[in-house]
Image (cartoon, rainbow, N blue to C red; front, side, top):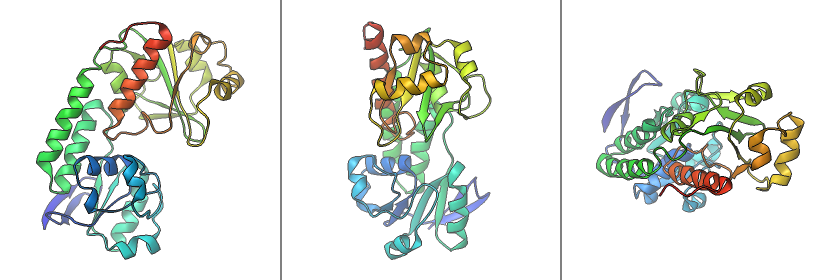
Length: 278
């Protein structure tokens, strides 16, 4: 066993040197575990853990917020991994029930995504593999540097209603890295719930990206009437072409985030009739 300091708990947590029955409640953590080659050691996941596709075959023990203990207990996990933010309630409950649980703080910057990978690797005893994965992801990121130089980007994620990244978010930081400004990148918050139509109109974006909710068809015909109802139909970026993104694209802060970011850039360039930057 090894003791590791958990910031969210403000104490050291004793975790196995090499945990063999890991339960992950965070989709990004689950994807990292699989990409570290630890799929055989993943005993259970949340219903939202769908990357890579093989993760869907693992036993489900609850959602992002709620644990089903009737599903968790038979798995006899020797380590449960959660993130912070909305999972803090589940974290405290798991600790009270005596489980070995380690929280890994949410990333809020582009470099934080690499750090997140290394933190997961450190907790599960696979630090060198995690460093190598982080290096590969850094290479993917470097290919995107300056790819959207000079553009103003508005981006929304449909979580049952539109949510946009604030200035303290890995999405806004990634847009900045690519040379773009985003609508709320000066706001000292991570997320903007129900972003103001007035603020979006005033920003007058060159690009309007929309990440669809699960189960909603990826079609402009579905989205345009909803934007018009919000008074956004006249926006230049909406008239000239929306950028449609699949469910859990940039909202997902696991390793596949960089593939989704590359897909976003490609769609922007094609829509604008510009050559790809690679």
